[in-house]
Image (tube, rainbow, N blue to C red; front, top):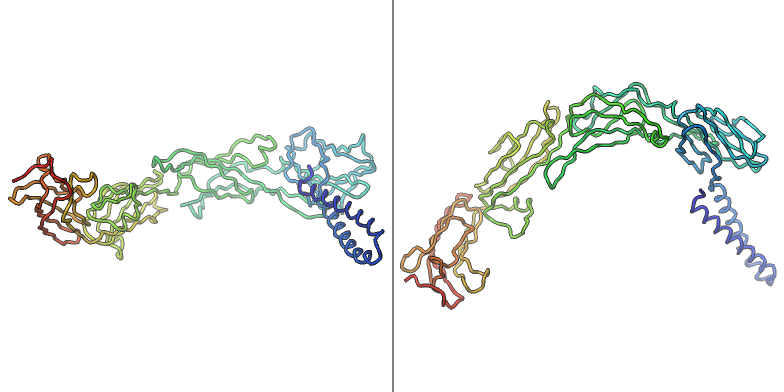
Length: 486
């Protein structure tokens, strides 16, 4: 089919040529002064249009003239500028080529270029040339009286066989990420020649298929998949991304077999024990004494500015049985893993940071034969110094959710105890969670507005001890439903 762009280019040239002819006619009836002015410009335009028309005539492909009978075929390449189409035939047995033959045309064949072509026939029959038993790696073209030609390169696909057997190579340059598959002998590259003598190659791909896993983040688990990789069909070996599971690798064929409708028996390697590692580590904050105001706080942000006690859960999911040995480390920043305060051998464990400082959480995983390891995961944790601030007033019962709880502001407290008394020394309320607080009630009812007293003792993750005593004012409501503790 004629290229869309080239077709429009031809229409444009024809349109401009029409207007050029009109302009030349009008030029002939113009006064001499105007005639000389426009003549040079129109001649330039005429030359330009001639060049464009020449380019279009070269670029436009001739209409396809080949029909293949008696065997399955596939047009693998349409080299427009090379004036050649490459046709793959499943075999040459019973193959027949039918080529359209305009009057006065000749049938030629060539191996390297049209300059060395051999004349096959000058006598078409019923407007066609018939080639019985075409030859492999040979070009055929019909040359018309005006010298135009369109070549058809014929390839016997059966003469370019795939390997008879494949295996996993003994030498694996990068077994931690790749697997090398090899076979005996080199795969022949399919090449062709244009009529001008330029040699080119077809892009042939081998298709390998093998079982694999894919990670599902939502469920934190692996699911089965089939990995499919197409690699260049050159040489005697192919490099593939190693599967995450132990598997046999299969060669299903190449990119031309399916197009030709040729069914090939898959070839399989032996069952290969993968060495590749695939890790998915997670750190989940179970409890922090400094709740984040965000509904879903950013983990890195939380760990970088944390308050003790910080209780975290560490888990790693990996492609077992390849992944075998797991080691978690927690150590002060600026030190090494050998100076870790905690080392845990296993996939999962939890830990509570109770001391202020800057730490690193790191993970190392090795495969079953210790030939590959992954130690790229680490997270920084900063436990800030302790802090305790006590408010001096609150207003229970005034506006729900607004300053209606007596609650301390704190950071990195590892122990805490608070007590509330009235002016007579009666204990009204006590709590030991620094995130807790007093709602202004005694025996289920709000106490009367006024002055009350607190006694707070706490210890920070940095070792600082707090002993706070003072008064708290209850304000902001009329006390109609309150009770007296006097």
